[in-house]
Length: 383
Ligand SMILES: C=CC1=C(C)c2cc3[nH]c(cc4nc(cc5[nH]c(cc1n2)c(C)c5CCC(=O)O)C(CCC(=O)O)=C4C)c(C)c3C=C
Ligand code: FES
Ligand SMILES: [Fe+2]
Image 1 (cartoon, rainbow, N blue to C red):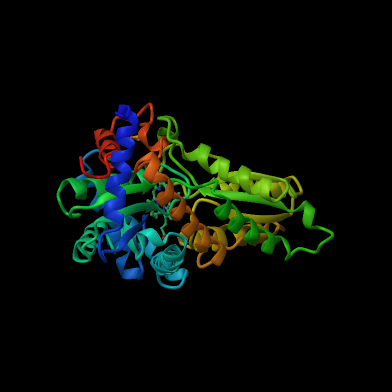
Image 2: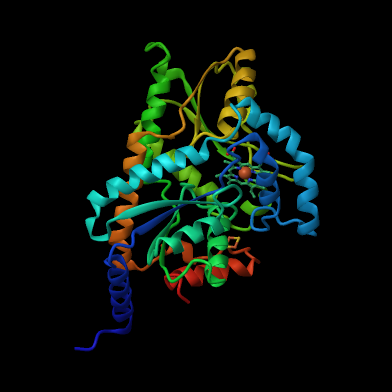
């Protein structure tokens, strides 16, 4: 019997994925995508130069010339922040711990595609995508999953990493690999459970009689309004994460979602975290747990901005404040990463390499790379 065309294209996907996955010895690669951070203070300048050179994150007029000037000007301030949090960003250390533990669990959860091996591809710090690409080639990888480590999707974060991977793929730097993508997972029950457990640990530091009065202040990296207004899904997806965490906590406490880390003079999504703390103090709300909801490990935004700047400011305002721990090496979170990947490996056989949502460009998008990238991944990275 002849299959209808949709079914036959689905079965073509499943055949090609099964073949690549069962190839002899070459590992199934799980490529952990994130922005990265300078591991030492000395790497700060190069990190900022890469960041300001990224037109998918910050489109600047005359970017090639403007980026070095801005990066150089900003370096001393940001170097001091990394020095104050212990001499660098811990993001590489935690991403490696998470990835290696996840790959071990995956071998048990999804033996059909074992062995699994995790790789790190950072957008602005080492290991950059080109370095990881060389490693994938050297290991003879035939099947890889691009796994964003941003739980919620934004074109300025996950979108930028996927665009970079697409450019390397088109340039032939990745070798002959069948790709699929995990592009967002901000409401996955394992992620929500890990965040909720860390909030409960912070709430437990307050006397039981006062606990229900504590305000949960969820804080996420802000976005320029120009990005929000072109239809970027990040604000919606961060809100969905907060809502799922509150459901899991049985709405035990009052809460708000606020936004941090604005850069430059343009309009950004608000209310700003610092202003929210001042406002709560003014209104007599003097017990707060700050919850980072859009990063999975510590970085300057948690260790410097939340712990050193905001928490100290809050204490001066008479607020009793705790910061919910970042997920870092939480075993509950690592298990969630493995579950997300195993579920993806099972479902992409039927549904294809990308989510339905990844296929839709922001209604206001004018970046042609976004369209080409989506088409390339939808074809398993082989178009
Ligand atoms: C979900 C996370 C993030 C979003 C969304 C995001 C958007 C975004 N960021 C900038 C500009 C800068 N971000 C900087 C640092 C930085 N940003 C994030 C995460 C998100 N950014 C992190 C985790 C970090 C810190 C890295 C670390 O410490 O490990 C910086 C550099 C620091 C500084 O100069 O202040 C800039 C600049 C824009 C413009 C943007 C959205 C378009
Ligand atoms: S900016 Fe969102 S798809 Fe291009
Ligand atoms: Fe940022």
